[in-house]
Length: 324
Image (cartoon, rainbow, N blue to C red; front, top):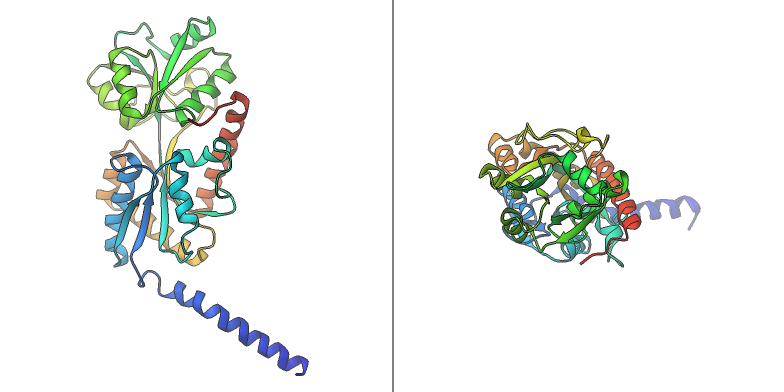
């Protein structure tokens, strides 16, 4: 075979190989239902976000979008299931902020967070709230700082060892020279039970978990962990305002998929979720989670997640934090 014919044959072969990929991209999402894997249990914020999105995306895409809960290991089990699913754009993960912590916290994570995963969109962020029982002597976050610097046995409860609340308080302790003792709980329910009963002097948890107890006057909010004040608690200062310039530790929710999914499908899914976030009813439901909606491009989501991974990797290493 002469060189020109060999070249034509090679081009024809490459074209044939590309046909299945082009076909699956062109007919997405007509072939089968789309699965949103919620990486935390039913009833939690990740599950609720997934179900809110699934309902709207079903309408927009003309294809059933189902939610499947695959839980455990701080969300890494569900994420791994998405990474190993067929990369055809029909399986996506809805994740929480633990996704940015897991690479440094979990030994031998069964996937490479940067190489194996393609962010689709950052759905939104929310503040965590540092609160204290109503009868507490802490009237402000400055009182907590003063007590911790004076080594007055300041302890704080979180939803678990290695949680974002745990890491945020460790970062505060390191940067401010504060001596504080961590008390891990198994979730927001048990933490709030002990917090309102006065068994733990400080709690740090998402605004969704904490605000009902603030509204009932059983907890007093001292500070929020985002760089800006929360619209839900406008009178509560940020940690940055309280002497820790630049401090920002938001809870967040995002949608991810396998990095092997064709970019055209990732882009289309991104566009559809952005469209869903503009629907007033959907936006209202998500804001009901205490969330500030973000949206935007896959590239913006990637940049945000990369910063989260880098920030918390340093905190985990410097404080020798271990997963439960």
